[in-house]
Length: 513
Figure 1 (cartoon, rainbow, N blue to C red):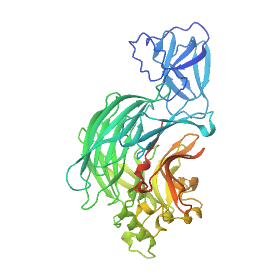
Figure 2: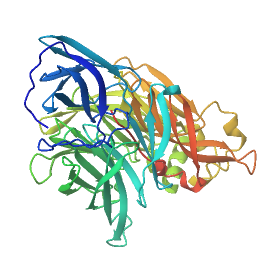
Figure 3: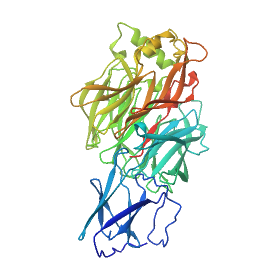
Figure 4: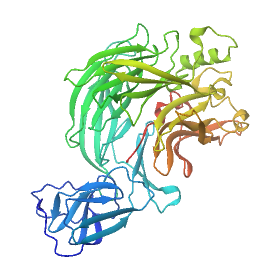
């Protein structure tokens, strides 16, 4: 192995490429293991290019420049870049003083979906030659008791599976628990299936709500009223970065989302009961509060749902607002139902369905604009797609308020024939935030929950698929599963109807870009 540039003596030629699996190649190595190849090429994976006269400091994969700084003998070693389409054919091309050579190949990518109640993380592998672009399902081998979140590293080589390991009561207050979280690191390029390479445990100060990763592999573990930063820049050895207790309300507190903003120098976190944002400085070792903004100062009900940062400008972000069924416990469902069934309601209890656009201006939060949304739906999550539109998951509000029973567990059992008279209750929409045009991307019988947009395949989302119960035609049975825009919905596990709400048990989904 060397970093010395070989000398070309003639026209370049690429004969084949060999994937090297989970190999991290130190320059001191003398031999390449031969058992790391499965002939699948994935983002971040090391590849050996076989041929003649291939000495160059850079080459191109499609229009992406790839540096070459390692050689095995006279053969270049490169890492496959991120951002390649899972369906399109890619071309490696190399230019030298003697001419040009090229070689075509496809990449395969993982979609990771967490079935929290099923205690399983499922992996769907893409395949350009399969119908709809997706191949077989795999399950991660893990003893995790409560898998919650999946995050994929910035270079797409590693999957961080985040699980609840233990809970310790602090006092009788239901909101005052600390949790031990375990992060299991998997190498996604290992042959045939991902390989576990490390485990890391850390404690967070409150009930886990969300996990977010940035381009430097810094991880936010968001609790109901706490925030923990973990440094995953070395995936083999994660480290605690900082902890911060978020501002609490006089009564209930639930932070529901957080995001890195302003070139990863700051974090915004969204609290739903006070409908407020906090802006945090994370440049120094100790996290500090910079600003706090009440988004809906006249409202007394929780209406703040999700944050989505503008992928083209990290100082801008959108806040999704509406009836927050992500927290759909018995009391909250009863409250929303009571409000929605009223013909007249006091202003402080009138729901709003909208997106608020905000920006970070130095150390302050500023509201830029407001975009009204369809008030017939309850929204869960938002994500920017490859086409620049905002994709949102939602459920028809009519479904939540039609039953006479206020208990969340009976929302399924009491619907009966009404479900079958409805065209759909779950929906994925795409919203152009410039023109405000809305397009329905997917719809059907189910609760469509956490989502990602997969290039050339479309939205992929976790769901509770609802079908007829085998016990009674007028009853329904939920199944945990995944929806894929290009192929449809997959029911993987029969769910207990008691587990439908709150819907966090439907789990989170991530894509290997």
